[in-house]
Structure formats: structure tokens, C-alpha cells
Image (tube, rainbow, N blue to C red):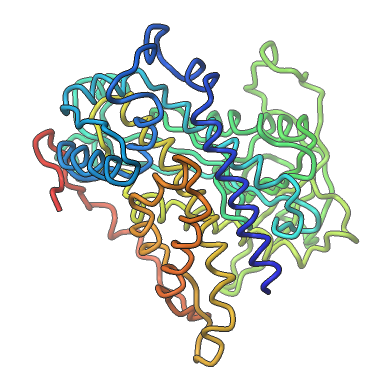
Length: 446
């Protein structure tokens, strides 16, 4: 256990150091500024400090966050950096591309999967990935209304602005590999096509029943990856025939639908994909239809797919963490640019949190062995403890000291794992729920 704990700590130090070097690299500043003249002079708020400010998860009113941020920088790093006005910061952040956080995330993810075989959790040699979408509430403003459109809520009383979020998520290692925020007018399958470019051989993508399509399956296989869909019985004539049969497992050929515009596709009307259809019987007697590219029934028997598909639940719980713990919908700005910055930043922070929790989790083994339940790190508390310490992780080579401090703090904040608990899902309670709108003059001060 000590050896594994030491390896995790050592690897986290390497990962965070790589991200720090990326943030402070001249090439990063050149690549991720929105105009050529930005960040060319020595200003009060340089490129790196804007990134660190946003990483510090500013959820309160802007003037208080800026005041506390610069006070911390001055005390912690003996710098004469002065506080800037809220207006100056608002103008300055426009020069920072939101894609910089995506770049930081790719550095983190790539480092995690490099020379880390003991830690990376796989299924039969596959990296288990899930794609799923969700809806988030956005501030009501003229600019966002033009960008995302207006959606009527179920009660048809008030107008709300929503954005569609989609993530590509490693469900076994709890890492978000990619995140996209766009208009709700763009469908989930269309967004999923943008995640496909990150797939590679020995990736298995698990998708819910809103995603099955010949086009998406074809593109996944072009990347030498595999897929596992949950399908509607009526997906096509082949699935209808299979559901009418007594067989629970069958290999079939599927084609693109009749309405497909083949002139824009890399395949023709006669192109087929070989897939495997599987019936899974649930505890309540219902039958789910799964479609997969894993054709070997000896290596992947039918009975393994029920638990395999269930692993997709990890991406559902990720959205709970993103919205309720990371407070994604509490944006630090009201413009499209600020919202994209906050979104990509939240994806990155969630992965930092995962790595830190993973390290601290090894530290609790042995400490709570004599108690009734197993224990895990409290993820809500961990995020609160990361406030300001996340600055130290990526500023002035402070990652090692900060990691040790965080681990000691997190080990003291654990919660029991009560296995076997289940709660009835009441979907109707959300139909008439209305979230309070975000006003320009109302932000948290505590």
C-alpha cells in the first residue's frame, strides 16, 4: 500500500508540474490569446494570473474575489502585484481564449495515461469511456439569448436560456477527456461526433439509447475503437426482428437509414457494419437491448454486458459533481466568452480534484479499518480545501508541498460507503422546477 501511495503521489507531482510548465510557456501565451497585441507588455494581471484566478473557482461577487486573490498572491509569493478594478479584469479576461483550459486538460490526461500502468484502471484491456449530455441553465442576457436561443419551461410561464453540455468520460478513472458546451438546437449525436476524434484503439465507448446511429458507429470504428449502445427496440428492422426472436445473442449486419445523404458521407448505401445484439434482463423483468462491436462471444460472454453497461452510470454521477459540487451554473461572468472559460475551467478542475482524491484515498487505508463501514474522501470538502491551494499547485513549483498538505487534510474528512442503498427516481418532480435566475447585480458575498 505504501509503495502504491508513493507512486500515486510521485505521478501526481509529475502531472501537475507538466501542467504548470504548459501554463507558463511562451508558446502557450501565443497560442491561447485572442488577439496578437494581448499580453505583450508587463501588466498588473498577466496571462498566468488570469488562469490562476479562474482556477481558484471564483463564485462570489467579483470585487471580493479579486480582493482576496491579490491579497493571497502578495502574502504568499512576496510580490508587489496590485489589485485591479473589476472593469479592468473583465476587459483583460477577454484576451484569454477558453481553449487554454482544454489545452491544460489534455496535458493532464496525456500525462496520466503515460507510464502509469499500475494506476490506470481498464476493463479487459479496454479504456471504458462514456459519452453523455446534459442541460445547464445560463444567465438571461441579450448576448446569450442570441447565442443559445430561448427555451420555454414545462409550465410555459417563463423563458429560460439553456446550454447543452456533452462530455467524454473515463468511467473507471473518473477523468473527463473532453467537454463541449453549445446550443440546445444541436443534437446529442452531432456533438458526440466531435468527441470521436479523441478515440483510439482499445477504447470502448458506452452510450445511452439516445445515441445509436450508423454514422456514429462507423466513425467510432474508423478510429479503431469499439462501442456499446443501449438501443430502442425500434431502432431498425434488424432490431425489431431480433426482439421478436427467442435468441438472446445474435450477430447481424446493419446499414445506414434510408434518409441518409450519402454525398456527404465516407460510405455508400451498400456499406454495412457487423454488430452484435444482446438482450439483457433486468431485476424488474424488463429487457434492455444492447448493440456492440465486441463480437467474440467466448471472450465477451452475454452475461458480462449487464454490469458492463451499468458502468456508464459514472458519467451520470459526474454531472452531479459538475453541477452541484463544482457549481458550474454559478458563472463568474455573464458573457459567452466568460461562460466558456468557466465551463472548460470546471472540466479541468474536476480532473485535478480526481487525482488529488485518488492520492488521499490510498492514505485512508488502514486508518479506518476497524470501523463498521469502508470510507472514502468527501468530494465536497475536498473542493473547498482546494480553494487557494490550487494556486500553489501551478505557481512557482509549489505542487509537492501543496499535495502533502491536501492529503493530510482530506484524510481527516471522510464519509462512509453504505453499499446496497437505492432510491426511487421521481422524474416528475423536476417538470415544474424553476431555478432562480442569475441577476447582474446579485452574486454571493459569503
